[in-house]
Image (cartoon, rainbow, N blue to C red; front, side, top):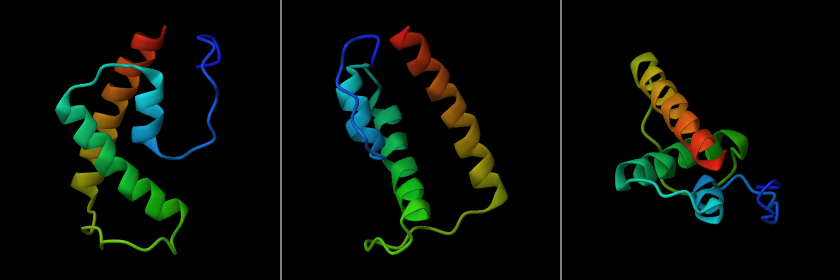
Length: 80
């Protein structure tokens, strides 16, 4: 974002950061980022109120990790 002269925003809201980056994502990727953000924000801010999140298991976490890595590489390439 700095290289493209976009203001750096201190935020943990992944959807907002993606919106500011101007990277075009599929609806599926946008939904995934929304889901990922909920888990991330809750782990970072445990007293955050809101809907209860489904319990995670090792399989779910492994799938999240794979999807996150793919999305990260896509976004990294788009911003290069």
